Length: 420
Image (cartoon, rainbow, N blue to C red; front, side, top):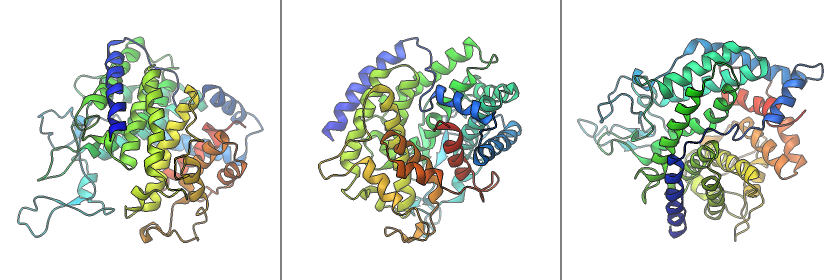
């Protein structure tokens, strides 16, 4: 606890400096522009593999749907946040349900791993933010690889509606995320809802800024929004406060670190980004056993999913570390646990017919989503067996209509994260 608190205090000081600076956004956070350019060249040549072409075709299919689906705004929800402003993000915690033993159902009770459909309706913003961020990412990547300006124009329009237009923009806070009727208007776990604002949006904005349609005003306003949001992440009681999401021991805490690290890097605050990557070593210390298992995620009913989910955020933090000269990949805790051990554990269960020992609910498992992690870590740690595991993953049966997560995994491997 003391170690976490010292990181938070330092981050708060650096964050205050950040918000006062009038800096513009960095180019890319997780992606590498030179690699993207090389892959685009290969895609347009006769050297493109069948799988690479298929990944591009699926990208265009997703982007063409995204062209019709927006724009998106938090003000479209039906429920009114306690603040009285629909510009504030609002969601209901997915694993909480009305107490059937009470006439009014209050307070709601938790059923881990069982999603309440009421949390995924148009009345709140949780589905909407996911739809928005994935749509903009599809449009940005389609623009980059096709060079068709129509995708950039639409993506930029969606960004302006969500972040910039005074009537429709999301206020830069998550004060009312994952509320639970009868318990809390908003909870620290609501910050997991907004991870897509970092994971999907930052590099998408960097790509969209390459278009002539992106203006200096767009750059200034998106920088301002993310600066204010980063400040909220650092200082609010739900986020960086002593009982906030920064102190969550499982994947929630890691995804909080991921957001702060990536947004600070995006905004050009390398000092804060370095602190958050260093904090990743604390996550390895507290989250991994010698065999690579993650006890905090084993406690969940969907242990395989949450092992993958936590690794996904840590790998992203390690990628930022690569750009800052900090090696999180090789770090090992006193028990012998490490990011590498965690990935190897998952690789040993990559065959979906093998028995995952920690939770029956994860059988059968969606193992294909691990493929980009094997690729990124394999390249970073010179593990050819992991690269092969990723490249040999069969994505043929998946479709944009039914299997977006797997389609995205194929895209990472074929278009985004390896040079051909």
